[in-house]
Image (cartoon, rainbow, N blue to C red; front, side):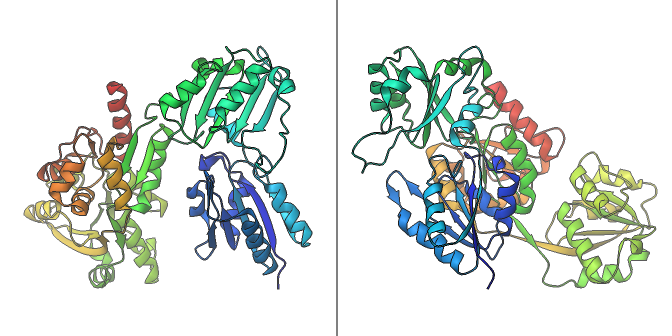
Length: 508
């Protein structure tokens, strides 16, 4: 049996991109992932499909596992010879009880390693525009727990020393004890006018910051309704937030946007929105898979040299076409002499990734534009192959046939409605917590409304901004009673994201 090892990994303060390179590498390769409430669940997407995922979160006294049970889990799996990624929010050795878990492993003679992480105090302060040290304000900073072990008879915090002896004070897990913290600081000499910031979910798109002074912060936090988990920062450096705030000034900060496109196509679009500050909810209403029969595509591939043009209408069309080409023992050399049209820059990029030259990219997805690439006067008698989903709009092939072209539709993939978290999205829509829903094809609109039923869907979408990628999608939305407020001039996801930014910036 191979020797087991436990990696105590700092998962960072919330933003999944703040995980270390070493941490990501271990999540991707370990046999078991044991993760906390504060470790972003998106990190689990990097885990192996066969990895065992064990949630041991602790939230406001609601513990799924006691610390002793957590210790037993990692010791047991390690003795089985497994590699365990013990994901802990922030840094494992800063209020993460990583030291305790390491001691348990040492006691049993087991191997472990520590992978440091960005601690919540450093991450939340940076994303709030509050430098913990600054030459003009303070050269000292200290981290404290606002929630000491309740079984201890006396506190380890010497308030008479820390109140005035350290420039910046950072308290973890201190929301419930905020009144005690404020009282102890003021009674021990800290000015009541000292600036204070309380930051919930620091570094995440739903980060919320409340600022005040030691005299006002309790009342301000109560009024805001801010609850744990949160970091408390006390010190003159908090006053720099107004000048240095960058994260909460992002154009889509605080906006919740639903993305409905296929899961495998979400990443770039979602990243663009997230980088602009949005809270992105992935709610794919369409997925793709290979067709039940490759018959029509195989027939086309058997006589591929007889075609003059091939028209790729989507990234999926390219993917499944190339996959089948390779599966049959063919390659791009078999496409020699074929001219290629790719609809949209993403589709063109996918084609080029396979070493295939694109001869024409129409400005928009309209039959006239696509036919223009072939030439109206030259299309007659041409053999044109369109690898696509079986069910799709017939306008393009019909228009080509009217001009005398011989068009073959080869079923390359099928679309279907995936399983999704209807309950969560429905709740957010009812609460009015969603600002916009984005649609990137007619199928995404139709399937989204099918999820709820037309009447219920229109009720849920009342006062929600509808963002459509282009006129065809917009027309499909209107047929269902949805009126798009956003439609970019260029029909790409990048342009759609930019239009969302422009729309909400004007709204502000």
